[in-house]
Amino acid sequence: MKRTHAIGLLAGLAMLGVSAQAAEMPERELGLLLGGGWADKDLVGGRDDEINPLLGLRYGHRLGYSFNFFSDVVGGPYNGDVPGIDDLGIVTARGGLEWLFSKQQRYNWFLSGGLGAMYVYVNDDDDFTEPMASVGLGQVWEAGANNSVRWEVRADHAFGNGDLPGSNRLTNYQLLVGYSWGLGVPLDSDGDGVANRRDQCPNTPAGAKVDARGCPLDSDGDGVFDGLDTCPDTPAGVKVNADGCPLDSDGDGIPDYLDKCPTVPAPGTADGCPPKVVEPEPAPAAEPAAPRKLTLEGVNFDNDSAKLRPESIAILDNAAATLKEWGEVKVEVAGHTDSVDSDAYNLRLSQRRAEAVRAYLIKQGVAADRLTAKGYGEANPVADNKTADGRYKNRRVELVPQQ
Image (cartoon, rainbow, N blue to C red; front, side, top):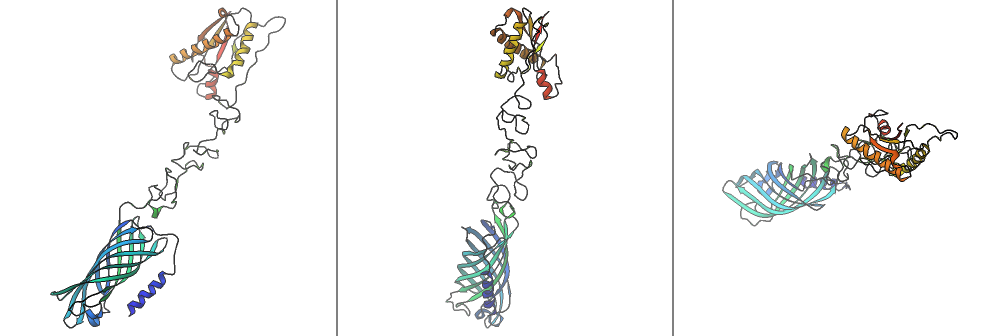
């Protein structure tokens, strides 16, 4: 029959293409089937080439990579010209497996096979039900995020022993098209919130933020994806570590791109370089110069602390030697801060720091009765507190002769 030749041709075409990529079909689906059917000549006589309308329902469930379980019910009215059989209806119910033998990027070819029952009712007063086997060939295509479109040609063969005409070994053919709705959440293999069908970057690392295509975002262009980038505002061109933060080779807290001394640790400095030690000017040999205010540049403290840093020791040692050259002149150790925090807080902090310097100078041999400590807080700035460099200059200790 022409129908048999058409089925064979479709099967041959399906075998031509096999792809390593496979369409993403839902795990479970429920669908509607529409189509046409041709009844066995034993049932409809010379009208076996007429197309009769069919309507059906289908349920599918994925089994592993290459198989689907399915069940469907399809039925419709048929016209015949066999004596005693004018009008009839056929309903088939079957369940079985679909083998996805050729998996393409957007669609899959399948062969179906199943068992079920064929129910035939004749002239509104006679009917019979026979067991049947079914085979089919078709395609299923992706539709939307989790749905599918399909077509299938199939043959249903009943194994009957009925007494009615046409109830013995019937073979009917069907051509069906359908639309199925996926049940549940669409597949999202990399868990980025974009369904596999629409994900153009299917292997996004966990935690990375993605765009509508499922591709990772990298707002600062440093090669570390947003969501994984601990420093998402890195300036363009700056080298970063695995967390997306600028490199800090000497570990002093100042990134390399801002550090003018990237191999020398200098925590707390503005440019990453150790502070310069200012040597006091020696007094003339013949007549000592009159004492004058001495600013101890480079004498620094930890944040919110009056503990002297190690790099301050050499400067204070030089200051102690200078004080000894001043003779018996009494000196005020004056502490100053920048404008960060409140006036009262800065006043207390500057007093503690002045006392720490006085204590160290006494330890180095300067007479205690020559030294007094006084904190001025932020009252006497020497630079603009609105800049980091200005605040650095305002955090100072001075030795002021009292004459």
